[in-house]
Length: 299
Image 1 (cartoon, rainbow, N blue to C red):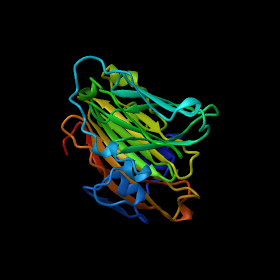
Image 2 (tube, helix red, strand yellow):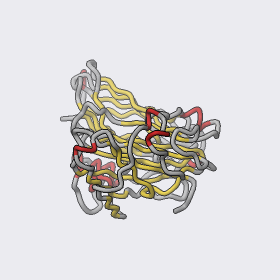
Image 3 (cartoon, rainbow, N blue to C red):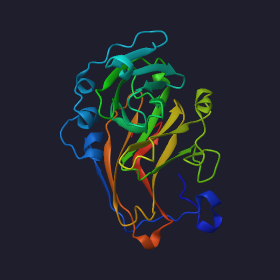
C-alpha cells in the first residue's frame, strides 16, 4: 500500500499529517478484548466482565443448519416492564437486532457478540435497533440493559463463509479510524474505504469490494465503539489504523483491540496501546500499518 501523499497533494478530507514520533504501539497476542478495554485478565469473556453474565461465555454453539437462519426472541421480566430482544439474519452476513425495554427509556445497552462489544442508548420509548456484522456462523448475542438482567439470543448466518472482516474496537468514546486500501489503492482512490467513504453492504454483496460499519454511540462517554470492515472473499485490502490528535486525546494513552474474522481465521483480539502526540499536534493523526495485516491474506 502506498503511503498517504504530502499535505499539499492530499484531498481536503484527508488533510492530516502522518506522525511517526511521540507515540508508542504495543501489540500483545492472545489477549481477549475484555482485557484490552476493561482491564480484566485471563480468559474472561467481555459479557461476563460487563455484567457477570456467564451463559454467554459457556454456551456451546450449535451446528449451523442449512437454510435461512431463524428470527429468534428472548424476554426477561414480566408485565409492562419486560425487556424483549429479537434477532434475525440480514444479507452480507449481518444480524438485525431490535430491543424494547419500556421501563428503561434512554438507558445504556451493551451488546456483546464474542470478542465484540458496543454500547448504544434506548430511545425515549425504551426501543433500540442495531445491525451487527456476524462474527460466526452461529453467533451468540448478549443484550445487557443497564440495571437489568441480560438476555442472550442465537441465530445462524448461512453466508458467513462468503466474507472476511477486520474489527477495531475501543472504549471511552475516543473514536478511532480504520482504513482499507483495496487492490493497491492509496488515499482518496476509489478503492480506499474509510470513515469518510464507508460504502454499503450492497457493494460487497455484488462482489465489488468491501464496506465499513460504525458501531456504538459516541454520546456515551464510557461506552464501547467499533469499526468493522467487511469484504467479500477474493478481495485483498491492506489495513491502516488511525488515531486523531484532538484536545481530548493529545498526550494521552488510548487502549484498543483489533482482530480479523472469517473462514480459517480465529477472532483473537490483539491489544493495541497508543500514546498520542502532545497538544501541539492537535489536528494531526497517528496512522499505523501492520497491526491487522491484510484482508484476503493469511498473515
